[in-house]
Length: 461
Image (cartoon, rainbow, N blue to C red; front, side, top):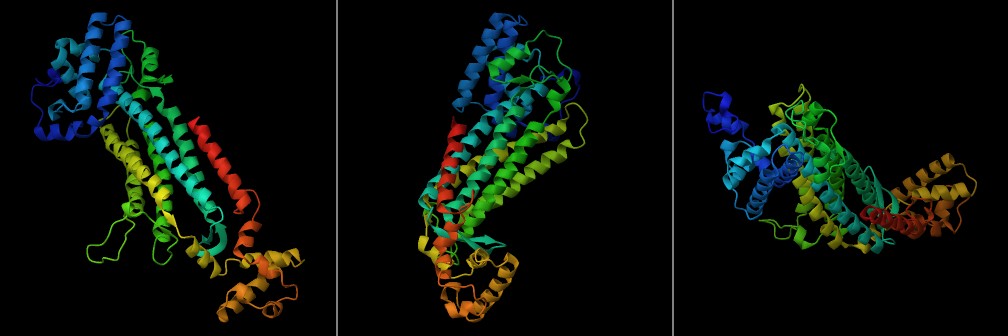
């Protein structure tokens, strides 16, 4: 039998079964992690005298040669060898002979693949955090340039109150800051070593799991062998965190699509992040934010897919778990690709300050400030709210904006109106008046930028 596990079987595997059960088409992405874990494992086997030091050294040298071939693109994987573990072992045996078969002493593919995925997510979570920080830095850069840029703030996609454009952008900084916190926290669950759990019950060999953890940089060792090989919570947690992060990316992408439309014209995206039409030469389509918005769905799908796979599985390992990898790989690649595009797209977008200001000048988003104005003169807020509602209705019927009404027109709604109402209604005053902590006043926004920089620098440490 050609299979490494073939001793028990009397027939060759059906070719369709072989294709169905083989995972090498996708788990080859774990090749670096598989070799890294194998080097640490065989180092421990030699130190514990489970195999001779000479054999351990020879296997390590062979694994280094396999790693070099991997990095040079010289490895050709075989479906007949099923998965990345057996392919790597086959490459090793081809390199150094039968002694390579001793590598698998004291471990199973069950704890081996779990270790590979822990290593993979450790590495990529750190990379994703770095990419999130790059987007945050781009947001801060744009915010610093637009503290005094005034834009309509929206609720229900209806103009609500004027705000600083920097304030609007920084809302996404803090969303990403929470995403980053979740990613950092998830590393605590990723940072556990499954290797040494065997197939499900441990091993008869006197292994030193703590030593392997030390060699691979893991902070903890799974205390239960069955949990070690069947746990996929760390992947679920990553996929859940990734889904929230992609939701935030999608919301920002939606704003970029809206803001760059002809109807808004608040920003213009750099040509390098847009495409044209095959039939309409005037078009400049915001394809990148549209695709980032769409790719959120596949990340959600990967989370739901794995949740569904795991929901009915008895302990410990089941072949169903082979379905845990493709969604994880896809989510990592989707996140990394999305973040790599988002940062420079924000950095290079041109802000149309005048268009934003014109929008603020042609709406009724300063109406709340009239109510506040009357309250400061002694009128109860509920009464002031009614007065302003009638005032706005009158202005709409007269096709005027609030700054265009005469004092006499104001006074017909209440005698408390005076000339100072016009200063209160200017966009600068409306924005500047919201000087409470976390508000949109320039003083608060500048303080917020300082806090954002501190948060970014604290994580970078």
